[in-house]
Length: 207
Image: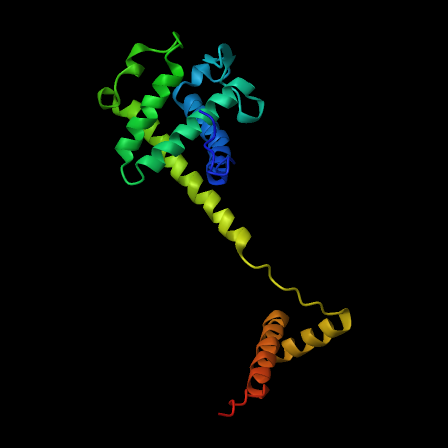
């Protein structure tokens, strides 16, 4: 599934950021769990059909075949759609994720037939795989929204003090048993307070 576009014809930036965040982390999390549950296969190739070719998916994200990466991103977009359609219904979102998985993998004859059952007929272990996609996408969305909010925050102003002034500030702070930074902040606050009190009040307009 291609990235959804806005009315202006541009890809949805929130979706694309969440897809990038989700894809690599989801794959590496799957691989860690696979090694944990199948230690004998940890160093063996795990060949799967991706983009019309058989590739080894038992690779870290950074060295994964591009066809497998593209499939992971399709799965991420499906998870994004699931969360968007069912933001407050984890099971409905997981069911949607499973249906999309079936569509992406129906041509792969190496997969067990039981995996293609409807979501409600799957074992709890298999359902948990779909639920994990929903939970990770929600985490991805929360993470990229947090970054987006942080970028919008106004940049902090920098106060520059030369070495001689800093030495005087340190000496004064030592006498008062505080840090130089605390003394500097107190000085700035004092200046702001004094300037506010001394500022001329606007005259009332004559009627």
